[in-house]
Structures are given as C-alpha cells and as structure tokens.
Image (cartoon, rainbow, N blue to C red; front, side, top):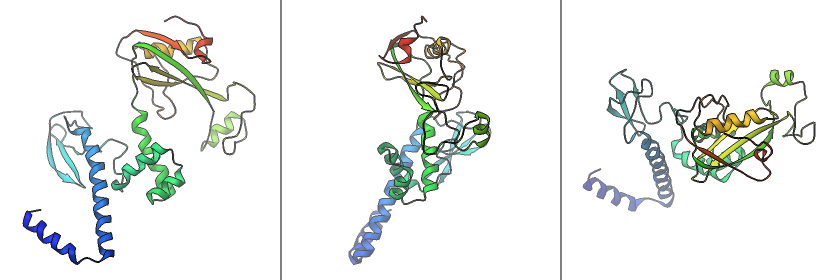
Length: 266
C-alpha cells in the first residue's frame, strides 16, 4: 500500500464506532496470526527448496497462493509450496495453528483444545494427530558418547481394532483399565528411550518381555550399526531403517531400568 493510501485509510478509522473498531482489530489479529504461522512454515524452503516428488533442486518461483510462495520443478513440472508433502498440507484455519501448538505444549485435552480454538472436537482431534506427526519423525539415527537409557511400560491397546482384539482373546477395556496380571507381563509394551549428554534422543518399541538380544539390537542401531529391525515408538510406527553412520557408544544405565538387569557388551 502506498503512503497516500495509508494516510487516507488512517483518516477513515476516526469515524469508526466501537463495534466496528473491535471488528477491525479482530480482523487484523487474525491476519497477523496467519502471517506468523505461514512465515514459520516457509522457513522449510527458505534455503534451497527441493521438489517433494523427484527431490530435484532446480526449481523456480511460480507465484503465490493462499499466502504461500509456490514453486515449480523444472525436472517434473510439478508445482508445490512449503506445506506440500507435510502433515500441514491442505490444513485450513491457518490463523489457529500457533494456538494449536500452544494447546499441545500445555497438554490440553481434545475438548479443552476445541473450546480454546473454537473448532469442533473432531477437528481438534484430527489437528492433534497432524501436528504430532512432525516431531515424531525427528529422531537421531546415531549416537555418540555417554548414553543414558530408561524404559516405560504401557498397556497393549487395540482401540478401534476389533479384529485384533478378538484375536488377542480378551475383553475390551474401558477408559484404560488394568492388566489381568500383576507386575510385568506380555500385556505391557516396553518403550526404551535413549538420550545422550548432548541432547540426542531416540526411542524404540521393544517386544513384550524383552531379552538381552532385543536390547543389544537397540544399542547396535543407536551406535550406527546396520540391521536394527526395531520400530520406533507408537508416535512414529515407521521402521527407522538401517543406520548409515558409525559411532561409539558408552551406556550409562539409570538405576531401576531394564538395562541394569541385562548386562551386555557392545
């Protein structure tokens, strides 16, 4: 907007009523929140934008759409933007994305998040899973130095999987429930978390009642050796694949963890 047009607009605001002024402020606040969210998303392609289809880096700018810069790949002629191929693709209400991040940070329930964002419960539920896909994929494939390890156990859940529940041969639980056996059993799914002193973190889902071989497989993968074959935590069920880097690993088990009960050498 030119300076003359801006001055004319500022003069018109003097004639606004209190209700109109509140509506204008709300509109400006929404636009500001949307611009902040889109600026964070566009940081993904700020350096060297790559084609999400063929991974080519020979791309050119191709206008803008919905506030995002569009690009065109010279190799496959596909157009894309910074959100293409991400969990945020085709997600609406961009002015509420930062508020959704704040709801996840505060640990709000789906109902409270829906009331805070002024959306339906199903929308808040879908947004939660969309936003959790991004941090779930950020894993360290190789660790070096001193690594601390500890485990946690969660009940095996077949929510929404009636066929798998029937094959397991047990009745459904209501609101969490309890295991049929006390202590550790095959109903408890162990999740092993590894963290270095420098902040590198990785997590793995171990088989029920893990043995020495299962723990050694985790450490081999964390050290950068190939043939891990274990999958990530439930937030990221994809297989991490073989690690390509090599490194050294020293284990510092936390007291009371499964690692102290399974001595090994790597």
